[in-house]
Image 1 (tube, rainbow, N blue to C red):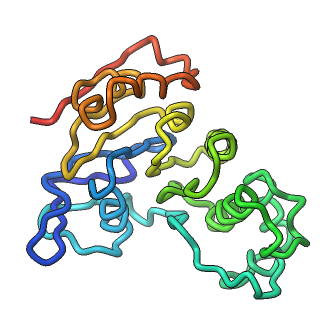
Image 2: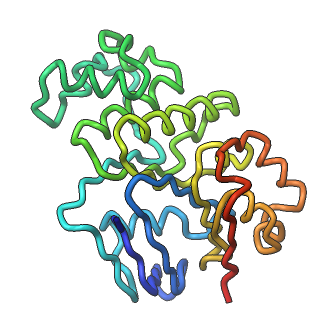
Length: 242
């Protein structure tokens, strides 16, 4: 089932187009990762999808009453604020203990419920944000570089947790990543963006595409080192943009 359909989307700030003629579809249950160099329009695409940016052209169709869980690129959090994870989980929604503990468990950090937010490690903090996004039982999670600031092992662990969340909840995932060497391990499909869709397909197909290698270098084929999906060697395709 299609959750999000983007057709001929263009976004501009002032007179400058940051995205032109974007077409993509996100289906139920799949993990789709958007990669691209700085300034390629990745965050603008996510903002357009969630309604934070008005498209200059094109259409974005969302499934009726689509429930979206959003994890921002960064959360400005006052480290001096005395607030526990439990309190943070209940800030803006009326949720009972079973509900928020279930979300923390799904995100892999049930032991943090009594901890101060200021005492969490970077990885724990991101998982608490993930748990917060899970409270409304979303049909799709949207993550804007949620592993920014984490080291590579931390990023890899977070992506494995995302895969686990998908297995446990059957929700789709749309995420931006800057870490090419770990993102492939958690993606069903990759979209390479640079103001337009350069190429898309399975991780191995995209990494092998000339358009991708032109942006990131031929040596980035090592990004497949952690890619272990069974379908990696089955039906692969790549669609270079005209």
